[in-house]
Image (cartoon, rainbow, N blue to C red; front, top):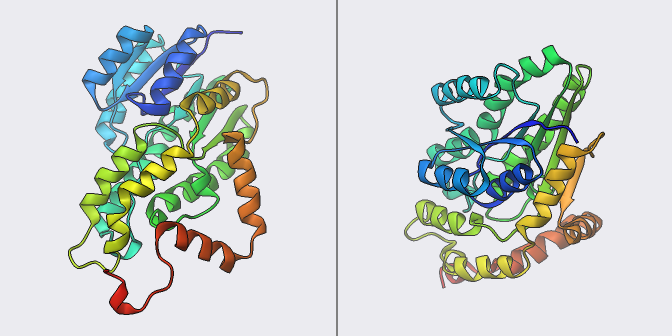
Length: 286
């Protein structure tokens, strides 16, 4: 297996951190990127990887990071980019403000494309490269109270499908990794985000009150970061990566089952799960 220059965005925690460590231990030259300097330094010490500070929402930060990556790779550029940076913004769509919604898209969608545009020219010149976009099963099925987050993943799915065809002619592979619920810091961050969007007197107060219980239930069913890392490693190392990796395997069965159900039936199941069975108006805040 040849040694590859690999950039992992969002490498300070969760899936990104685990992937950076695993790929470095395989012998690849990994560059971990993220906003938290302390976490990057911990990653460098543990896994012997290069690190760069990178805020995917800031064009100047991206430009500076790419200059540093060019120095690290001695002008070679990146062989693989793992677009993992992102976060989840939960809450009823009608209670998420413009600023919060734009911030969600700025990180998850525009940030991903900002990185992709920055690295593609060198890949085209070399006639090879690989882009691995970390999406979600929420890019295939929409869950209540995750409409904002899921919509960014739908966007990533569509963009990846277009990029796969557009860049394939230049020897660049594009693969999607679609995790289901995974035991990472994601749930804790999402709960923090809930407090930002919650409105006083919200008709969804009963659901907000159950946020901790819903997160615990999701965590109970969650897979391990190692499942996602295994898929990422295959997407990096395979001669011909799969177009999509749904992980863990149980999530594939769940997706298939949900697609078989009539839409109204699935709506009813999801509504009951989050505590939104149909009620009279006076009961909504009970």
